[in-house]
Length: 134
Image 1 (cartoon, rainbow, N blue to C red):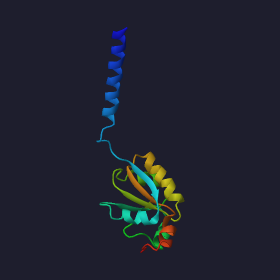
Image 2: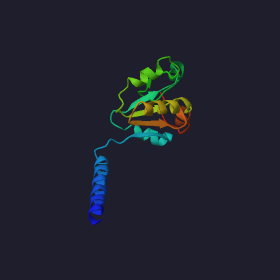
Image 3: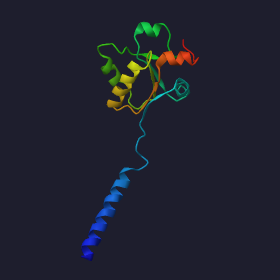
């Protein structure tokens, strides 16, 4: 009986060691979240950040965040265009009010993107916060 107990204890310790080894610090951090315009503005200082505007080209032409890349949410190949982007690059994502960018954030999560920050309330909230638009 003591031997059976020792075997179970050894098996439990081994299992715990395997689980702990799988949770090491070398696992990648995934960050997909919606933040306030002020917090989003701070993201512009992130090295290599890609500002992604998912409004229509007409909306983009009326004003956009500096350096923004426009990919039209309503384009027939929108999902394909998003899937071709670097999944590990940092993104700052926005639309007009947050509906299209929210759906895009979900898509990017499904596609395995690891660092996407969405501007809560879109460019309308950004402008209301007095943040720059070109």
